[in-house]
Structures are given as C-alpha cells and as structure tokens.
Amino acid sequence: MTDRLKGGCRCGAVGYEIALSGDLPVYCCHCLDCQKWSGSAFAEQGVIREDAIKTQGPVITSPVTSRQGGQTIQYVCGICHSRIYSTNPARPGIALLRAGTLDETDKLRPQAHVWVKSKQPWVTLPGDVPAFEEAPPSEEIRALLRPAS
Ligand SMILES: [Zn+2]
Ligand SMILES: [Zn+2]
Image (cartoon, rainbow, N blue to C red):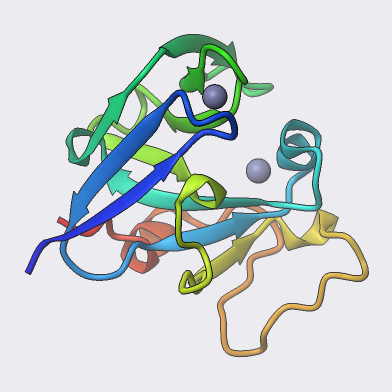
C-alpha cells in the first residue's frame, strides 16, 4: 500500500507530497554542523527516494560545500527559506528530508542517532535505538535507513 506524506515550509508557499510504502526511515544527527544549520540541538532527517517527492511552489536550489569538500544541493523555500530536503551526488537517487517539515511529525520514530559525541548533554537518547559516536559505517546506516519504496 502506498502512503502519501504531506508537508511544507514555514510560510506555506511550498508544499510537497511523498509517495512511499511503509514507515519513513528517520535519523537524528547531533553534529555541530546540523546544530548550527538548524539553530537547534539536532537535525531530524528522513531518508527518501529523490523521485518520491513532488513539490509545488517557489523552491530554489542552493549548492553547499561540506567541510569534507563534498557538495550537497539544498532545496529551499524561496520566500521563507525553510530547507525542505537535500540531495548529494555521492548518493544518487536518495534525498534527505527535513522531517520536521512534515505536516504530521508525532508518529516519527528515529531509527538511529549519529554524531552523539557532540550531542547536547541534556538530550537523553532511548536505550533501544542505535547510537553512533560519529558517522556510522555506510553499510550499517544504509541497512538501518533503507528508503521506503
Ligand atoms: Zn516558505
Ligand atoms: Zn549532522
């Protein structure tokens, strides 16, 4: 069965729909870049197939170079500048959704926490969810966070 998840930006000019079957795989990144970028304690990311998301409204794209030299493309509302999702040429076909932009976020259950060595000390992680000091080995994170198809 295919579900349709809906979401959008803060101002409402950009909306989107994601077609997927099964639950959205979500992880939280506690790295300092994500703290800076989100202006919060961690980022909550959903892993989707790039072709599963359809947006409408004034989406602009913005290339951003990471500290490691890789490049990501950020998909952003052109009016309120909410980041909606990003892609990375190193992971073709996969997109990372800012999960907090979904209309319904209360059912999301993160399946992994990464970069917990820089997490804020007041953030308490559930004991039954895998947590990684830094970035996990890519096979391990791929197995945990296979995008729903
Ligand atoms: Zn907006
Ligand atoms: Zn991060």
